[in-house]
Image (cartoon, rainbow, N blue to C red; front, side, top):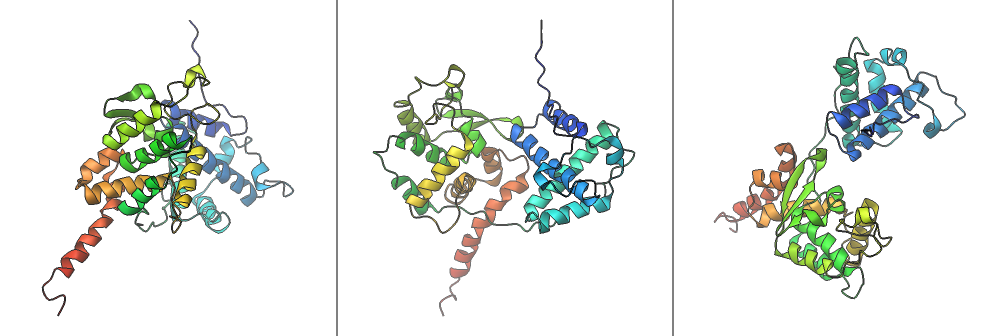
Amino acid sequence: MRYKIQAISNNTLPECVNDFLNYLQTIKGKSENTLDGYKIDLTMFFRFLKIYKELSNSDISFEEIPINDIDNKFLRSIRLSDLYAFISFAEKFRNNGSYARARKVATLKSFFKFLYGKAKVLDENPTTELESPKINKRHPIYLTLEESLKLLNSMNKKDKLYPRDYCVLTLFLNCGLRLSELCSINISKIKGDTLTIIGKGNKERTVYLNVACTKAINDYLSVRDHSKVATEEKDALFISAKNNRINKRTVELLVKKYIKNAGLTKEKYTPHKLRHTAATLMYKHGNVDIRSLQRILGHENISTTQIYTHVDDEKLRDAVNSNPLSNI
C-alpha cells in the first residue's frame, strides 16, 4: 500500500523554515492561514537580516532577496539585537502597528523555540528576552441593531445573488463566524438547527442556528444551482459565480458592496467587523454571559472575548443618569 505524504517543501524557503512549518502542520495541527502567517513573517525576517548584515545584492528589490541559502551557521549568528532591529524595521519601514509587530514577535519566539528545543540547531535561544510591544485594548467596531437591520433590509431581493448573499450576511450577523469558517461550511454538516465547523487551530465546534439562519439557509438551498459545480465541491454551501466554493476575497467584496449600498460607510466594515457585531448584539441584547460567548465564538482564551464587555459602559452611563440628583 502506498501512502501519500504531503509535507511542506518550498525550495524558496530555508530548510529550517520548511521543517518548522511541517512541525506546526503535523504535530501542532495549525491551519493553512496560520502557516501562511508564519511563512510571511519569517520570509520578511530573513530578507531583512540579509540587508542588515550586508549579505544581499543592493540591485534587487526586497521581495526578490533569496533566503533559501540560510544555513545553521547563519542561524547561530542571530542575536537579540538583530531581532529588535527587525521589529523596528517592521514599524518604521513596513508601517506595522502594535498588533502586527506583536504577531511577528510571537512568530519569532515560536520559531526559535523550535530550533532550540526540538530541532536542536541552536545552543541558546535568542528570543528568551525578546519583549512584545505593548498593545492598548481597543473597543471592537460593530454595527448597532438598527444598522444591522438596515444592512439586511437594503439588499435588492430581485438580484439573482440575493438568496446566497443574504444568507452570508445573516450567518455573519447571527452566529459570529470567522471568514474562513463561513467559506468552509459544508451542507452535510448542517443538521437541523446545528452546524459543525472547523474553527481556528483546526478545532471542531458546534454552531447553533436560530430561526433567521435556518430560514436563510433553506431559502438559499431551494435556488442553489450546483449542476456545474465540480464533484469534489458539491458539498460546499456557498458557491461562487465560477461554480467553485466561494473564497474569502469574494465574501470580503460582497460585504463591502452591501455596506456601501446601505450607506454605512462611517467605519470600515469587514466580515470580521460583522463577527464583532454578532458578539456585541448577543452580549448586549441577549444577556449572554461571557463564558457562553467564548464558546460561541470559538475563542481559546477568555481574555479575547472580554473585549465585548465594553457595552457595559452604556449600563454604567444609565446607572449614573438614574441617580435622583442627576437632573437638579
